[in-house]
Length: 161
Length: 93
Image (tube, rainbow over all chains, first blue to last red; front, side):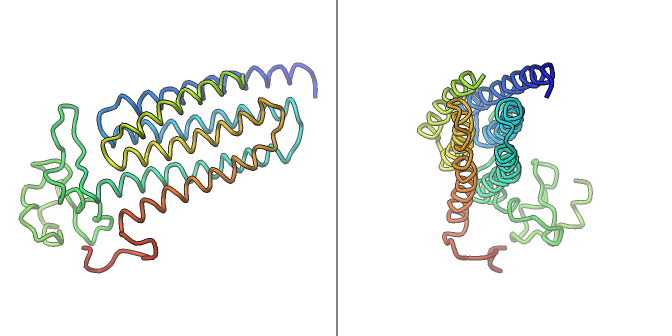
């Protein structure tokens, strides 16, 4: 491979690795400083995926420059492939289980955006349309808390949400 | 390049461990442990390149899969109180 291509690859790998480092440190700071679980989940989930993409692409370019070994490149791509599937899935499962256990998300003033923990776990269970729509914000669907927990009878009231 | 990446990853791993120790709820700790696992995968890969032995990537590959399975297993246990149940029971709704 010509010399300038290797130099170009090295420079691009440096840039990608630095972007990955910024992502990683931003994720760590976000994990410490953000106020509640769901915002921390955003910080950790997004930066895990982003930093993995950038760092593994940088290592892929350095593999081309230093080793020229297709097995190493294949393993890197395999790690990237698995991480792209597993990190969002783990974040989703974590958020859903937290909501199911009744952990209520709050807005920037510390005010809960779901009325009660029972509403939160009902929201986590309402995946399909046949279980009716569940109001996320108070006032959007005020008749909902009178239902017996099934949500089916509120379909006529929830067309605006 | 790899030294800088390894230092950034180590700093973030310290922050993540701090969140796992502080975390008010169980899910904060679990999130921190999952994030820590991802950082370890990256650190193993970076360390392999740093020492000129990219065979470490095998370990990183296995670690990423075990990390995911561990997180989902703990979450499933807390959601259903049972690792063997397949789906929602009818009386959950």
